[in-house]
Length: 127
Length: 466
Image (cartoon, rainbow over all chains, first blue to last red; front, side):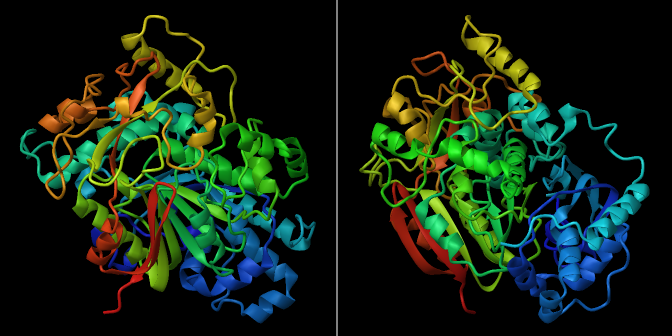
């Protein structure tokens, strides 16, 4: 489970979708790993506007990383600053949550992450 | 493009950050998560029909307040699909995965048309064969089958490794296999440039020939209860999935959910099996029964192992043995279900036909059991002549042993076919011409384009303007 992916996920419970508390999901007992992935500047620069930056800051902090700046970098920033680009790449694409749970801030349901894969199937009482 | 892992200052930073994160992690699940409890493989297959329960998440029938026989149509449909789709895929995942690695041309075209930086979803991603097509997009695949997702996850890792030098090795190994295979089967769609190979790393080799997308992720989710934020994805695909849903309401709801996931103007491609298959050997065509149980013959007499390792074989083997023992005396202890591929009866169609998409191992018309009634909008198909079921009634379905369930529980294999390989029955709704477009409209979508490709109907849909 990449940090990037977390930025697009919410609780699978229908009633939670409309709540602001269901996003982002909160990592709990997270074990992280780092994959070695080739950097793709074109992808990163273009994907940036699709990122919910505030949520990314939250996730990043909750995973124990230093606080991200309040505002996202601009495309120009990324184009001209290789170190910045790489840092973003490492956070979004290379950082993996291998084990742990993702917790909905609205209903409190915990989704298990095992072997790097999150499971969003719901128990019957939540369907 | 880009560079390989640069030894830069920020890399060191990242390591430090990760170390910090490590420190934060608490008691951690690792100790508790023995191999068997991980994303699925072992636990899910251990009990056939109860797999979904093992997985901790059945969209199940309420057990306490509903008598088992009085199921509401939705719950009944869910139970039916659990037995006739989900559990089957859990059980046949390695075999299925080993036969699925050729993208459909229309799908590949759709994916390549997406812009750099687009974020896409692949709902019902199976083994993840569409992850990695367009390297400038980020794709998240989801599937109901944890076993298939674990295959998809391996694929994601494989793709990530392609950037490394080993990829070159894979490339040379598979070069040249293409022409030979094509001649053999003589049934390859001309439009695709795919190749097949029996080399263990055929998947890698194929990808290595072109630019490879390494930005992918996978997760386990139900197509009707997706965890994706609404309106955030740029596009979505749903290939060979909704034809497994047993009521029209559910199929339309699935399309509705896909549309909800994409932003305004975002496109959704849906691909389903067609009723009109005049060109195929299955014998289905216009006017025929649309709701079928289609056999998947699980080949266990495997001459040699194929790609797609199944790391958690032990429990599967156990299950396999247990099941096969019910049907055949001469079980071979060391032939777990994995990695069969060849259809021994029709050698040339074994791998070949398999990989052209949603094809069956041996779907001869003689083993197809049509359902008894037209279940459209009225609930799941109830297979009348389904000998299929009988095996392994399980606790998972104990609360849902309605008649349909009891008669058609095909979570386990049967020896119904004229051979000793286990046969799993999967439910399909075959789409007639125009039906997919109707479903898109019913889901409040608009049809951007649609078409027919080799026994399948497809549509590209977007939000209807309100």
